[in-house]
Length: 102
Image (cartoon, rainbow, N blue to C red; front, side, top):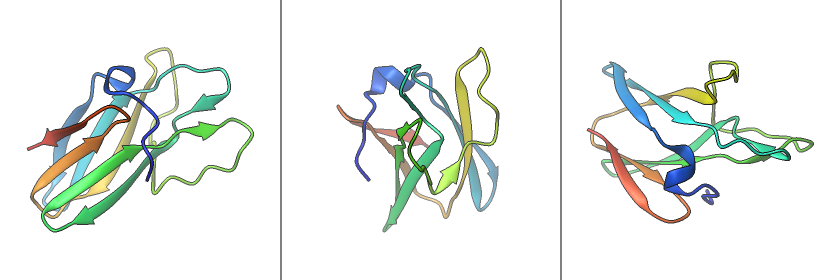
């Protein structure tokens, strides 16, 4: 899980609880000509869920753990649903780590 995007490139990030065991994470997809974000990768460690926004080459195979659920449109947003067992959700950027939930 290597972060490629800076915090500024994916803002705004909105996280909301969907159910006791699931959250939604919505973020801005940074517009590039040769790359895109098709979803996120994540790792649970103790009471923390670390999330990295995946960066995929347009001609490469891309298999993020959680794929975006909405088609890319003129809003340039992606939304993924992630398992949630309570605790902190930390979004890992190339330049920072940020707790995004709760």
